[in-house]
Image 1 (cartoon, helix red, strand yellow):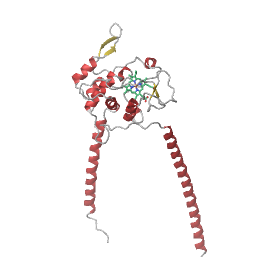
Image 2 (image 1 turned 90 degrees about the vertical axis):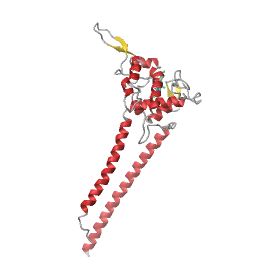
Image 3 (image 1 turned 90 degrees about the horizontal axis):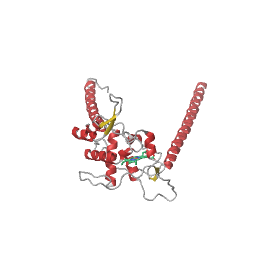
Image 4 (image 1 turned 180 degrees about the vertical axis):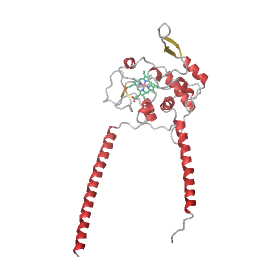
Length: 282
Ligand code: HEC
């Protein structure tokens, strides 16, 4: 009898301990839940306008870049953005690589030769200018960051080589910035000289005037040059620049999934065959 009571006592002790742990666990999870909820709440309060979502050709499991759009996007970049934004990580030869705009080698040579590149020093120790080669990096609009800031009211036009990857929202963010200018900013917003209102820029103020509008670039393939189309093309090009191996990555991913599926079936069949010899105990 006494043993039984002892056991019961022990049981209730265990139970109490268990209850304690459960209640502290509950408190902890409640605390974390509130913490996370609060954090996401405050960040949603800070969040501004929702980005303009586009359906991109490179989205999804089988996504690929639209070649024609990449080539047009390159044109928009060179004719408009390149006067302020550099793309230091790209060489002209990248433009003919597989998975990119796929310009021919001749076209790339022609593109590069139109650029003046500072080279040297030569035998007499002087720097000289020469026409560009496909192996040259994209020419920068400014000699250095200070010169870029001086020309842009103190703001630095960020290098665009990996800008799409560097910004939350990626392609949708860049697209939204380009489309986010309004003629009339809200009345309570004061804008200094050289500062513009943009719905999607953090803080709504940007030191870049609206770079694209209808027909700012002339396409030779007959594609309409609306603001939306120009923006879409340049963002497609910038996305490729940020992730030049996107297509190869997706292709390898697909092959891997197929390989794993076949392997799973094979392993299952082998397992069945091996266990066939074991008599079931009934
Ligand atoms: C006249 C110079 C100029 C031209 C042309 C120009 N930009 Fe800019 N851009 C700037 C400056 C300066 C900033 C920095 C603005 C700031 O920080 O307030 C900027 C910022 C940006 C940003 C915001 C980046 C961020 O920090 O989040 C994007 C996106 C952008 N530019 C895209 C473009 C695209 C695309 C083109 C071509 C269609 C273009 N810009 C053409 C000067 C220019």
